[in-house]
Image 1 (cartoon, helix red, strand yellow):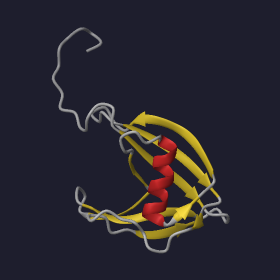
Image 2 (tube, rainbow, N blue to C red):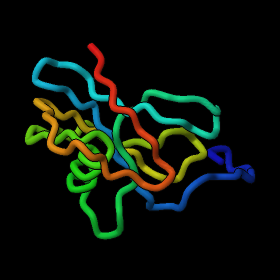
Image 3 (cartoon, rainbow, N blue to C red):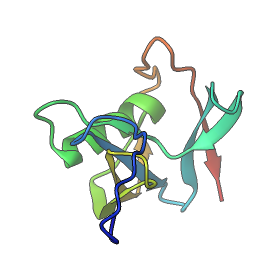
Amino acid sequence: MPDKSIAEFETYDREGRQYVAVIALTPNNLVVTARQFRAGPEKLMYELPGGGVEANESLESAIHRELLEETGYSSSKMQYLGGLHKDEKFNAVHHYFLARDCTVQLVDLQLDLDEHIDVKLYQ
């Protein structure tokens, strides 16, 4: 601790793990969201598209892949906003992007077996 005392904490995820998420905007400035069930709160939630960065994958590749897989949208105007630890007990770094002029490229989403996503657009 900063005062040189010793404390024990439980932390989550492995050190070095990285995640990405994107604020994705259509040409009409509608926000692309992923609505899906989350087991922790046991409810449907509206989230930014995103997910984990694979081994040997760049942040930019990961965010393009996640946006396309989860929403069917893509963008050639991707801007990195920054990275941070979500909270004091989470070892992973979360990186955020802004994507402009997103357009639909895939109709059939490429979801994991435990993902059930409805894409919703908001003003």
